[in-house]
Amino acid sequence: MIILSKMQVAVLFGGVSSEHEVSRVSAGYVVRELDRALYTVHTVGITKDGRWLYYTGDDKSMADGSWEQDPHNVPCVLSPDRNTHGLLILYPDHTETVRLDVVFPVLHGKNGEDGTMQGLLQLSGIPFVGCRALSSAVCMDKAVTHSLLEAARIEQAHYLWFYADLYHTRADVIKNKIAARLDFPVFVKPANAGSSVGISKVNSIDELDAAVEKAAKEDGKIVVEEGITGAEVECAVMGNEEPIASTVGEIGASAEFYDYDDKYKNGTSRLYIPARLPEEKIEEIRAIAKRAYHMLGCRGLARVDFFVREKDGRVLLNEINTLPGFTAISMYPKLWEHEGVSGQELLNRLIAYALAV
Image (cartoon, rainbow, N blue to C red; front, side):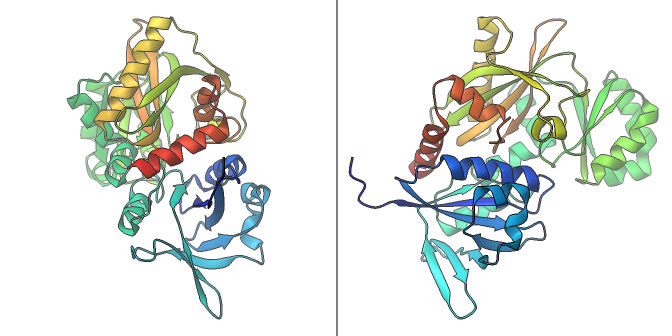
């Protein structure tokens, strides 16, 4: 096969987010796996304080954070002007334009996975990997996701949500509602904070104040969900109008629940692929994952997380991640690898879906 010209791909990493560190690691995977015979790769790091830097160093420095001290970094911006269709590299004595064919925003959590970056990319007219602005925002907000899934009659854990400032003035009313509607233990979560950040397991009313305070540091909207005893499983989905779903993976969490450190840092949780479930249950989960993906307007990719309740085998949807992790211990690439899709082929497909929108 003769490649007449390489596609210009920008990989964005870091971000103003509580998941800044894991984004750097995920982006390292993407940068390593992109086929250099097909793509010219441009890496753009976003610092925690929001500076955009055009970075030309290696992926190891991306992962450990030392990339920010690279003396070759140059400030840059993504232009919303569709005639630019790419990056403006702001050298001290001149500005260079890099026209892009596609952007892969490897950004987790706020200011990256929540529709903000997707809105900028849609303004720019540049194709990008992942869900559009609206579906990204919807899936990021756990309260909105719950409400839409409930309207679609997709089963979930029992829940309620409220604004954190209301808790300061009406805590007793909210506590009474929680006690009346949910069985303890419950999980208190910020509605918009990414994967397992700011979450607390609460065993009694007396523990609610501290849990709400912790969650409120991440977001002004709080979700409380009834705890589920059972298997925690995940399904990888990709595609546009006709998405495909992987088999189902199961998490054997090493912590009390599958928290941020367990997902991304210590890697002590055990993953079972396929999940230790009957085949008919796996097929049920795959079908629900595709239904939820389509109903919430997802495109490109998402990881759909579920509980399988121990007492009755009911499948309960937990959350949808529109830019799942791509680290060495992340379920999304591992599930596709199990299906025979290599990391390189996975990225080729995701870029193809981006260009097809």
